[in-house]
Image (tube, rainbow, N blue to C red):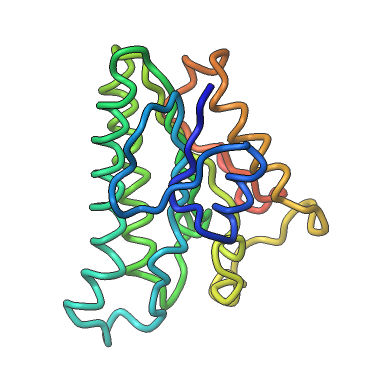
Length: 198
């Protein structure tokens, strides 16, 4: 299996690329090559500009809310073209914060949640092509340590001291396996037991 991690220049993306022995690709240009799986780290680039929604202008909204899903759409389109002949896996890694929301990150989290909805729709549409699309959600501070302060309202983790990076890696690896082909359109939360969804 040949994997590429998109958005892997450093931080969480760089960690995943190294842990998965994967090619490391930037968002621009849209990934090219022959891969059987794509891991797309969404949430660190571009870094958001936190602030109240009432003070946001159209330029800031476009940068924080619209650029991320547009980029994800291009990656999904390229991913489908790459995988359509033989099937494969696409895994998005996103912050958990989009589920409960966060003050001063409205535009940023709007973009993240748009990616999640897009991924679910792609998963339903592309199952006939044997392409699964899933998401792994993990704490905001793993994407950008400076953003952690905006997630302080989140429920305390059941395992507060655990190193989440190996858990995220193991979850992504599982979703890339052939055995997980029928698992699609789902969000798996790897956050030590903070956001517990049914």
